Length: 225
Image 1 (cartoon, rainbow, N blue to C red):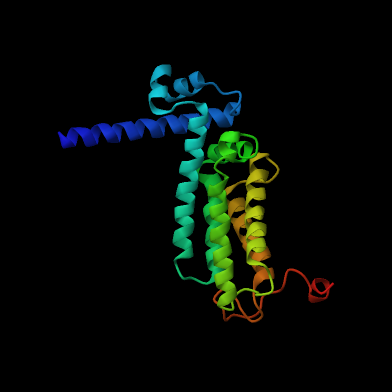
Image 2: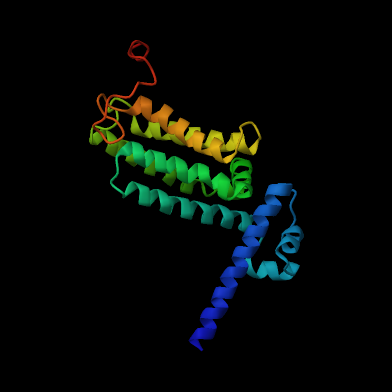
């Protein structure tokens, strides 16, 4: 009896995941507002009515896609934050977590980038995005406290700048404004970390906190103005 219940639950979860994946493909191809529930059902290979057994509406589907994506991403960020590695290495790994999503699932990134600012269903879950900023802020503040990152910069503002750079790169890929091959993605990770942490590094602190001083992003005479 228990085995049958577990099997049915597993099958239901697999069907839900299959419908979500189909929804991502349809939303990426047609856009959320132009997509119909019937389109998603056809893409998933299920009856129109059966889809409503798993999701109440098209909005609920998009919310599920957003929630599941951010839950997984925040869990990975938490692992990076708890690693105890130097702040620069943690920021490099955060950049990899965010940017490599494009390589794994470009349709998912297209949907998130296009819909996050124009769909109320997504805007209601903006708190999830806030948790990502908070994780990056904690990494930067910890680096400041350990003498690895400059203490004269506001950690929260620096977190927004860092994540904003990642988000703009994803947007550039979605809009076709930036090359997005395997080497391009690796170069984007490198560029963000070098540009951002180059200006964050404390004097005398390298990737491990004791390497030669990295060049600052902004010359001292400009910062003093």
